[in-house]
Image (cartoon, rainbow, N blue to C red; front, side, top):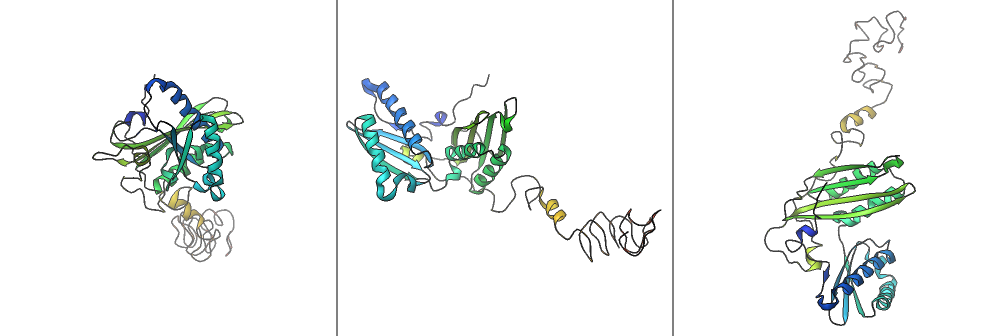
Length: 312
């Protein structure tokens, strides 16, 4: 059996702070349940607000809630109306005075929760799971992450039997405590069942003593070495387009029916690679090993078929 520690829980008190900051006393259990209610309520209430995490701090009579979001405009609403509504609803829920702060996430591609939810939404929209995972990995690496691992489990692609697939790029040292690793789990509710999405993002390593106050430690910008420069290919091939880099580009470039110096299919004078026109790589055409018409391609025109001056 896999006995694995939660990457965030494993680093609490070392390089990560807690998402709930208060002293429990005799009513610890009640406060814990209330925190869970608040978090569930906020994530359901602002489902399209790109909420990454909710930090809860308590004093004797007041609860201070900090919402970390990639879309502060949606959470705040027009002239702050939305925030005021949420505040009133939370006052009713907790029967205490509530203050709400909003913290903007500048780079959502480096936040594991938002990345996982993004993939889950794509799976619900019936996008191929491989494509969703690979494009996400590419965009996260481009933003300067040191490494990312994405795992999806369930009836992938509507398959009869559930399975697990994962892709990773860069480094994700889970055993290194000073490595700033963000982890999240999201679920996609598809027509053929739930698909789980797990994301690990390494943002570099933290040296020295870090401030563990929740709104500083957790949402730091990436301290790692920069990722790939923009425009470099992340998958397959050697640059160029998605389907296999240079070779894919070469196959599409040039015109198919070779004129002078033209593409690779039917060699005219100076035809493309692999199919010899005049001076092509395989012998053919003028003076080639098979007698063919003037400028005829290989295996076309010549041999038993009479080849005139044209293509055949």
